[in-house]
Image 1 (tube, rainbow, N blue to C red):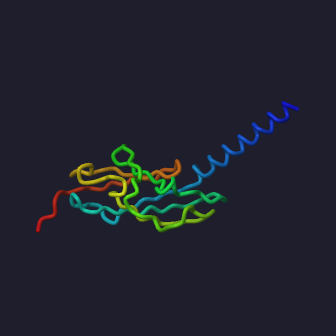
Image 2: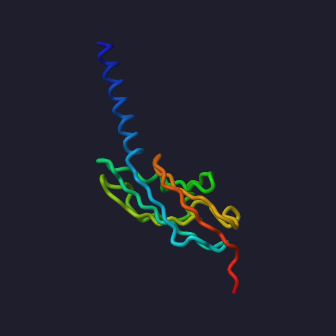
Image 3: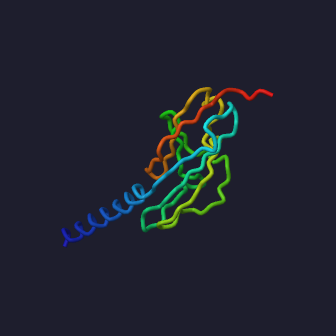
Length: 142
């Protein structure tokens, strides 16, 4: 009896782990910038396209924060909740959505995003977008 109970528990744990892994491996992310070059301290907005390839809904939030992480020049920046989110709590099965992301919401300011070229990618629930390159070119002159 104990062996049967143990076997059932092990099977349930394996199924739970499999469900979690499916949602991590079932997202396709594409990040785009509206420009290739920005002035320092210019607001940078990205568009993240999220495709859910699975047959289950996938949550987008940890508490009040969108689960996205910006990877800038190899360093991760979590969403610090500066911007309010008015979208759905999860992405529907086989669904697709576009999410506008401002780098300020990740604590990325002109102090971090200095003059030069920077590699940027986005992570969500264990899935990664391809990297893009953005360039900061200095201050705008009047």
